[in-house]
Length: 430
Image (cartoon, rainbow, N blue to C red; front, side, top):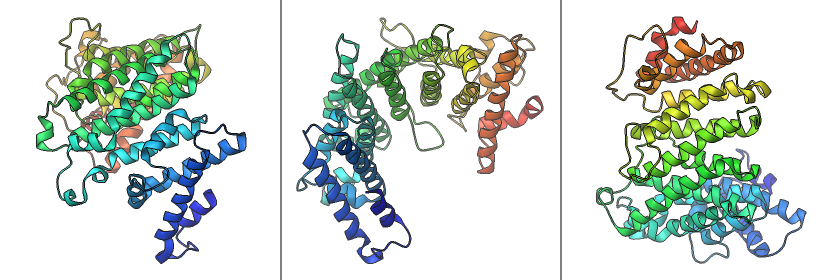
């Protein structure tokens, strides 16, 4: 299966340039026919491995060829995008579930697929997109399945699939909102409002699942949060206020999970590494809502304080019990803090300070913008800590920050606030 894929994608394809498109179409139809043949059947190990390979190859075609994405939305094929969404949750193979969820993400994010042929010249409409893609229906299905993760009995493979498919729906809807029409930006239609509420609940449930007793579910929830709030540009998109409450609750759960899996009794570097990566993505994605406060009285934590608690949980990894088992966690912490510090490169901050106090002041640190908060805490507290393990771990964090700033500078982005701050304090790094 992969040999044919490599042959189709290679520069010297033996199919030839003229017949390559036709060959890809035949190849995709063969894969879809295979999925259709095994749909609803109990599978042997060999058959499950075959579907794993088919899902990998289908994802490559979907992400590369728009013609393949168009074909999957057609009502005339034997195995369409609705079947893929169902298989992404119900498949017995975790690999198949992950790749099929990515396929659904590719389909959702290609907004032109959901316009009528006569509307290709029109702007993207969120309302039309939600109606034709079935994104809301699949998001609701994933939310209902994730709710069952905290019951006395649950099906782990379904929870795993719902975490990945739900996160693909959330990412597509979150990024699609930024590309909506002017009418959609002020749209308060029940469908769009309902979709935001479902997405907020999914974020909350993924956060609750981070400390699940089943490691597979815990890691799936962490990866789901990474997918949900990942983005393609240099700056994080504006976080929609509908997500503030669910996001704050998820961050609160993430803080607790980081502390748990860095404690002496539960130290687990594998789970800690997935949580650290999730923390970096969530901190970067929530930068626009850093100063927000919830209007709901029953919310136990606001987004701004939760972000600060999360950065403290990341710093606590340095020299902690999990770090003693795997020293490379310090590099992961550095990458997460770099993402947090550089989420809005050219933003104007009202609380920047050119003069730092000689001794560490937590109140002062928490009031600084992210790029200054990270460096001030590192140089005034972590590097001078009495614990030698924490001092040694801080060196890897400094290396990660310099590497991130150097990469941005090499790409010509010297005007980013984090790059300027690192350049200004380069003598401290040295």
